[in-house]
Image 1: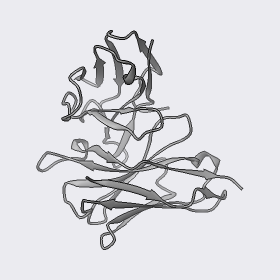
Image 2 (image 1 turned 180 degrees about the horizontal axis):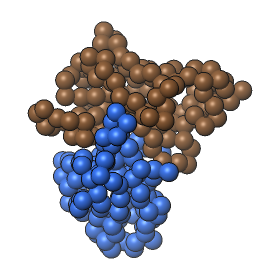
Image 3 (image 1 turned 60 degrees about the vertical axis):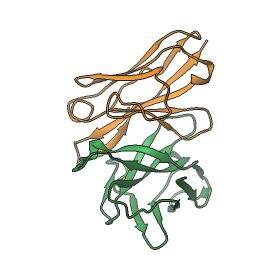
Length: 111
Length: 127
């Protein structure tokens, strides 16, 4: 079981908006930044969002992040077929001497 | 362009030790704003963080793997390493090496994020 809880799947039609949630606790997402990674089939993960809501250069503004308390969300607007893949949230957990934790991942399907 | 390349045996027998190397190109692992990490992904499953090493040799480890894992680095070769003892079939996974960075002066661990990844190497545990 992942420390960060994500829905296993999400879907939407091209052009639609989808959101993916990530729920943690006070020792992880409630006290540290949340990061989002996109993993397309057969590739390494790629950074989408850092420090809760910041987009690296090169990431389209269709992708946005937010956080309230221990709950974070990734929103993807104007869905495109190339967005289909797995999405992971991640953060640092301050318990047990500190360690990095990932959510279980959400498989996004573009219908 | 920064590159990370994993290398090591693709097949390890149960109860033996898994050892992998990550060679870093176009960046120095002695940088003070970066950590060097290992992450794995069992076939068809999610990402699992293994651990992290800093330029001075200090490390962090996953609590679930801490008793079996060691992470180290060789600054002269610009490489870092992971060893995992007493492997079982559950350790079969694609192993990624990755860099974590921060943009914050005086950063805490929560300020670091993965910005570069290797392509990953599949390690199968089987007799």
